[in-house]
Length: 339
Image (cartoon, rainbow, N blue to C red):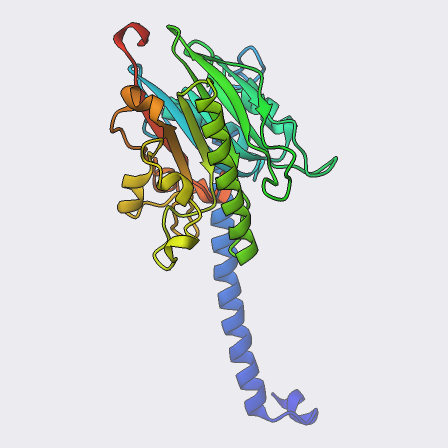
């Protein structure tokens, strides 16, 4: 303190400054320790997900884990999911973890959104023995894209070449819907249409989603009434609640589908009633599975489910996605069940 007095600083200023410095050092020490612990946890996560040496399969990767989360699918059902895998891949460990999650959930068909790396997508398929895939050719620009893709288990189902529909209206559909024709083992056929509608909460964003839903309704009516397959599933990221509580009836974006129960069934209605979320940050249900009336005999009153991956694995949102998958398990006739 003598030196500080000579410099013209009062002794109490030195004392307060010293105490603040000590407190700051204490807080920084705690922060550094916490960061180190988090880093160690991430290292453990990566060590568990990434190492492939010594455990390689035909593609040079370790086999996917089947015990990471509880299974959703089973041998007596066709297990169809939609899943926005946020800006896939989010992290160096994301690809291996998504492969583990698909295998652990025991899914037959997975319609995914936000594939932003074709190389990572190819790696994901390579990490899933027994699965094949299709991917939309759409791009925003030459180097930027969020593609819709579909993974499917080859011994359960085969998919046709994908077709982008309603692709000429990029304002309404910034990412064109992706349609495939599926043939389930035993000969049952159905169409799958994966969608990823305009995001955002601005009035213009909602108007674009309204236009998209009207266009999808018109397309499905024309397709089914014109002699196409009447067994159809429309699934993906709608970016919209079923019926927001603060919205007037004329403002309900999904009204064209909700108001036609003779044609469509939202398999997420029970989830909405139970306030179950698919989008973790806001707690909203914006990912949906809709089935056509032609599937009523096969699906019956079965509701979709949302596996609580974020509760089963605390790293899920940070490393995999801010969306949870939505899964519909369709009972298979005895002749089509896995033996």
